Image 1: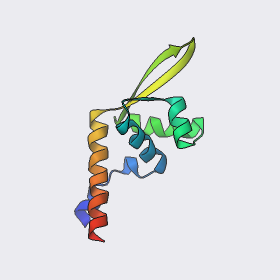
Image 2: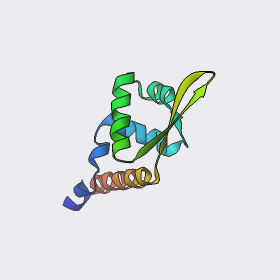
Image 3: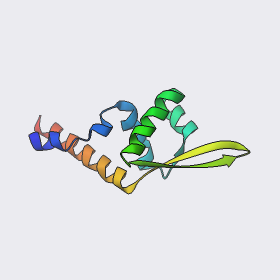
Image 4: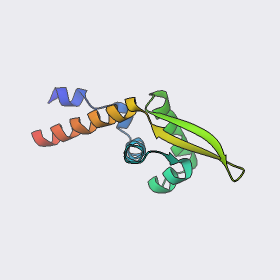
Length: 98
């Protein structure tokens, strides 16, 4: 059981970060507004969790303009996708042991 616990990634222990990665893994990309609406979070809360995932190199972003308004689009990196899959696998294995 310890080996499964060791496979859990602390970056995904928070429900907002777990939600961000879940959304970005099943979509090619999502902009800040879409993530905010999907997760039902505030701007500041979402921004801080995105920054945490960026520091882990699990998420990258692109800034551009959409009708003269700034728009930030987020993508899960390959490293992030692999880490997330490993995390989910560890949870599945833990549940099977219970």
